[in-house]
Amino acid sequence: MTRVSLTRTAHELIETILRPGDRAIDATVGNGHDTLFLARCVGDSGRVFGFDIQSRALRKTADKLAQQGMTARTALFNVDHSQMGRTIPADSHGKIKVAMFNLGYLPGGDKTITTQTANTVKAIAVAAEMTSAHGLISILAYPGHPEGALETDAVEHYLYSLPAQDYQVRTLASQHPTPSAPRLFVVEKKPMER
Image (cartoon, rainbow, N blue to C red; front, top):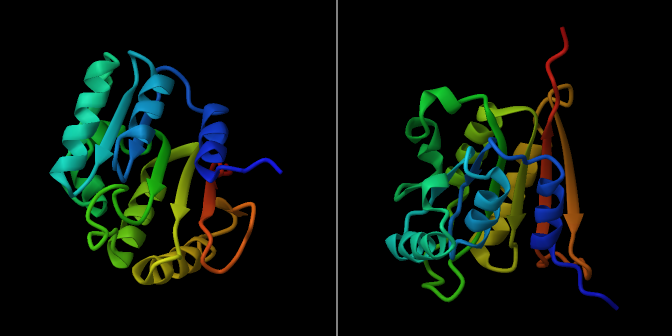
């Protein structure tokens, strides 16, 4: 049986809509894999805004981007993702095509430092406001640890309370869905009806 990667699924969905010149957010930079992926998609004329509270994560990501010649496409911020509305320049508000969240802790890092439920829900709300029509938000959640279980439940509750006329929400399960298995939430912003 082929193993289905939810990260790969998120990337495949994003590749269908993210184009050169677009703007994107990596709300949880981590080891920089999603940041680099988004930077490749937006091209030289696009912009990726990356957020992480751990300076170690930002350093690793900055090195990875520099090695690939993609530093100019990105702006990295050592602040919590809930602050993205204050951090991203106003001229990009409403023009974000994609926002990616990969929740939990930094792989290979301190597992006691995790994304926090209240801040994550706030960040998703800000991303929803900043995303353009036909934009997409992907949220990979990990309910397999105590904070992750609380966070996943809160994120799911928030997402499914969004107005259905404005947002389409889907949940994609891992290949072996269990209560503790990762899940991918996909939010598509509908165009405003006139």
